[in-house]
Length: 186
Image 1 (cartoon, rainbow, N blue to C red):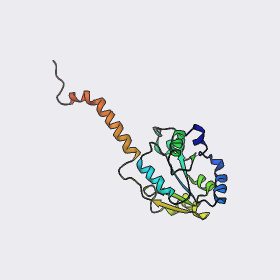
Image 2: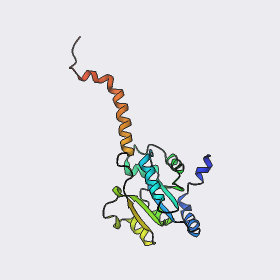
Image 3: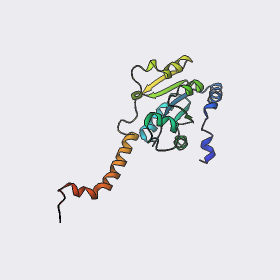
Image 4: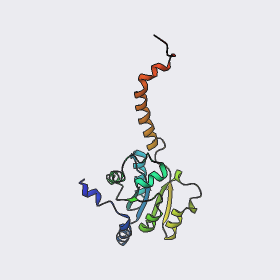
């Protein structure tokens, strides 16, 4: 895919209303979901496939670098927002991506007006019907679907812990011999 090819699938926030009108007039059912998408793994790919199954066109929101830092701290994200957005366009289930400027996807939902907004079960409590996202989507007649995580054994955090733990273990193994016995004079 040439660089310009993936960028044609990157929709700016200001073009979301136009995208909605175009797809709506073509009779397409729009599905939207959002996340960080840092270090994409199989569980996320399964989730996106499942999300796509609820409509014709899947638009994926990618949290901006600034939005992620607000929620997850200064050490995240690992990959830049444009890299994360580009990676998503290589997945067959993803039709369009948009970068979310703030932690909430409410403004994006209001502009795109997807027929279905999909989110992960564990991110929402049983009180989700009081959320701004739920109210925004149902106000214009859309539906909100809360689906289970598609991999209970793989997460970006677990991948990082394994990678860092392994690297740290290799780095520290030479020093571990000194833990066995107290240091003595020679």
